[in-house]
Image (cartoon, rainbow, N blue to C red):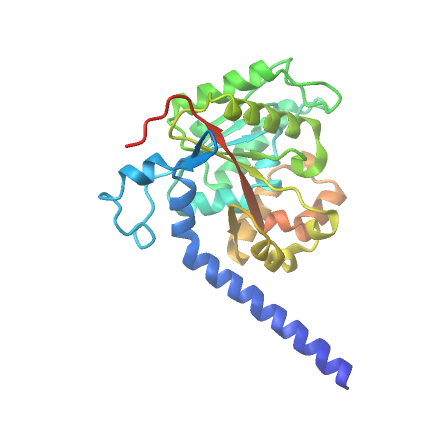
Amino acid sequence: MFVFLTILFVLVAYAVFIKFVYYRQSRSWPHVLNKISTPLYTVGNSRFCPAQERSGALFPNSEDENPRETRALLVTAHPDDECMFFAPTVLKLVESRAAVYLLCLSTGNYNNQGLQRKKELLDSCAVLGIPANHVSIIDDKELPDDPAIQWSTALISSLILKHIQNYAIGLVLTFDGRGVSGHANHIAIYKTLSHLASAGRIHEGCQIFSLQSISIIRKYLSVLELPVSWLLPSDFCCVIGREDYKRAKKAMFCHRSQLLWFRRLYIFFSRYMFVNTFQAITTETKNVKIY
């Protein structure tokens, strides 16, 4: 009986903790959005935020005010990345009236399904709330859907920089150095963005964040992993509830050509369908003036 009561207490306490995380996330999200929309730079060993220095008079109580308009660019490698890995973030940004753009660097033509997968991607984006005219799908022989082929860093750089400039992007989101699933195409995007940031080629008003890769055990704990993500360090965290999860699942089901049995299990068990955590890629700037 004692063991049973102990287990019951632990389960109830864990369920309450999950509810608490959802509550804290809903309360803190406006401040988080304001934080990630504010550029952070390094000059030598010092870190400062020019936007915060200059905007004090305009946003005297930034934690209590609605965050300023955000223009976010999600850079992915294949159709289905946007919902398989980034759905919580996209849904939270769209809910906050951010302008979300998607740059998908291939058509996913590994099995000669490129045309079908392009349509599936547009259907998925419609479910997530990304307008079709905000979606760019690249079909270039230098960027094939193939983990065995090294992608062109120069081409990726030019495409990302063009999108940042053309759409006045203030927030870029992509994979980290492990690519979540270890896919070489995912990792190539991170390496390119990391190089652009360290070389000072990202303009002054833009921040870059990479989606954290986690252990396989945590990856498949579904919503039960949420408190762990909340407690462990990250630069920001996006959490969605039941209704948004249904939208994320609906977006995944738009990718009919990819719905093999193990992906159906992924939809149910993956924590990436419920929570995203990000780390900042620090941007170097040249000749930045402090006001």
